[in-house]
Image: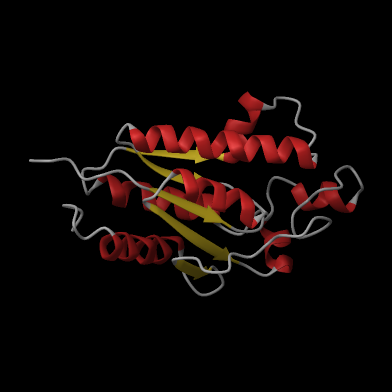
Length: 180
């Protein structure tokens, strides 16, 4: 039996839009397809790559390039990757897509007000107090994906339903694999 080819899924959206919750629901569904899956969660990776993060534009550019390269290497070695990262610029996600041909972009959509209510990490509060000047959606623009393979409205779908939606797209896009 041949192993299904690996691919990458990038969950992008405002901070606190629901990316991590969807990633947590999606991972076991992919693992049921006998895929080896790694979640690259931006906060966890950032603590290693930039332990004293400034979130400057130059640092973000470098961080997202490194994150994309990390994901591409994992995919090349047969590991399916879920990127759980805001990636506020289209260029960040496009760079990852250029490295990973089997790539699905998922726009996790959530109104800013609701994301601010959900923000248990305090990202938006720090931005409002002036402790951070680069919060995507607040001080820095968040570039909404132009042509994602999936759009998820987190005001309408549960994380489990969102994960099922992504899984359906995976099956449609990669039907030549034994992922169905």
